[in-house]
Length: 405
Image (cartoon, rainbow, N blue to C red; front, side, top):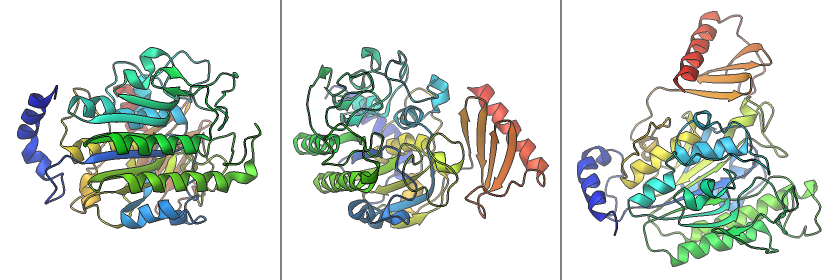
């Protein structure tokens, strides 16, 4: 193995710290990792979050941990940058969903989780939607993924894979494939095939197109959107996720989340949806299952940037030589501790938001709004006027964070 010596040395050096992060009695083999991302799934779209039954994802929630206060970004590209790098997407200038004709993408200077795990012996694959740049230097194969199958851009027909410019956006590594196949079916097949042929350890990112527009169920191959088939689209994805989870070895951690808030679905009690800095735009369903992960529901405030450092801890992999904004939440998974105090920040053009404990500060359209999420998850009662010190402290925190970028 190319980096065997480095790997053994790194594990030896970090074993003391890793012992508190890994589950007691863990097998000697380094665990496998699967990160599954849904697209535009609403906070209330799963049975485990109060929506209609989603049998396989509901079973995943029962077998592992379900999070009720997990956050991402409010658009596709920023959220995916957060997941891939463990760093705020604002550091990379990826603040909006990339258009089909965009010439920017995830900078080559960023060290993705695939790159870091690959450097220490993991087989890596991405199957599904990338949306972090389509030029060669931004390609998944240029960012640590040894195998890529799927779409590079943000939106396309589920069957013909033609994007808004009429071009086929469906690839195997760097080769364009003029295939006609339902994307959910294809993504599931390629993901399970990777699991079947790959020796441990591995890292798989399975990023579904569902339920992004144009909404198309398994039988909607007529080139039209079918908003009334929203549930069928989710059901097909749920069935595919069930196959992926069933095909994974026992020593596998499975992370599931939506990239941002819901667009066409149920957002439960949350205000607004995709594209908003309110909770409906970036509070997402999130589940984790794996060896010795405690069962139940947790209200720990977490974010997509936390997945990267948590995976490093679970696999005993050293951190890259860059600053990670995320927090390792493996102690939460094992029921042995919590994360350290932190704030979360969001931006969208001139609007911005801060989360600090129970408080959420939204500055939208120049209006300052403060909400106590412990009693007002729907952000209906603005209490900024009654809490000026809290507002000022959170504004100062935002300014300091922005300056630090």
